[in-house]
Every structure is written in C-alpha cells, then in structure tokens.
Image (tube, rainbow, N blue to C red; front, side):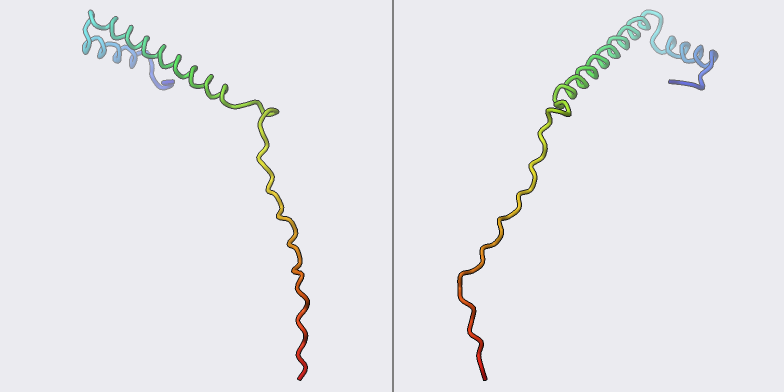
Length: 86
C-alpha cells in the first residue's frame, strides 16, 4: 500500500498522531478507525453480493429478441396501364 515508507517515516507519523490526538484519545481514534474500516468492508461485500444476485447465470439469460422480417409486400392487383401509341 505504501511502498516507500521506512521505519523512520512510520515513527514520525505515529509521533504526529500522538501529538495531535494525545495519549488518551489515540486508542479511541484507532478504535473508531477500525470500526469504520470494518463497516466499509461489510458494505462492499453486501454490494458485491447484491450485484451477483441480480445477474442471472449465463445459461438462464434471455436472448434478445431477433428482429422480425416484414412479410413480403403483396403485389397490387391493378392491371397494367395501356401504352399510348402516337
């Protein structure tokens, strides 16, 4: 997740958290962060289960309707026009 963070960088980050939140509030902040992450994971799993539940398996999917061809046009039953002679 954080590939370029070494041990000294982690110490500095923890020291900043300790100074910002204090020794009494730091466990509460960590606990709240853990609960938030747990809830986030639970919701993500619920969403992924809901998505897989809504998609029917490939065998049961209905094929899209094929376009129907129009019936051949009926020829008009009018007699051919007589040709005019000059």
